[in-house]
Length: 114
Image (tube, rainbow, N blue to C red; front, side, top):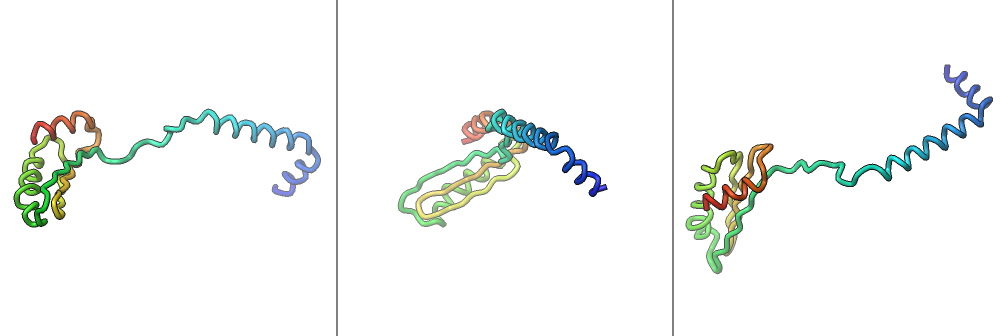
């Protein structure tokens, strides 16, 4: 079968060349018409709470800032995961929501619970 395809291609070089040119033109057209935002955003909906407590050790920041905020954020509706990290003088609390949650709704709920 492969031999017949090669034989036909050699006998009909003009048709093969026309097909190649049409394929290249179709590829160029497809690249130009494809929108840039064709790749969807697959990241989770999350809200990050950054707090600063200057000059304090991580244990103090954990006890007085990170832990109270983290425990309060666990009550936010549709919150899937709540993670808190304490460092020298500041902390981060990540509130990750269920899929399909609107980002602006999530931000307003977190602000409401703060």
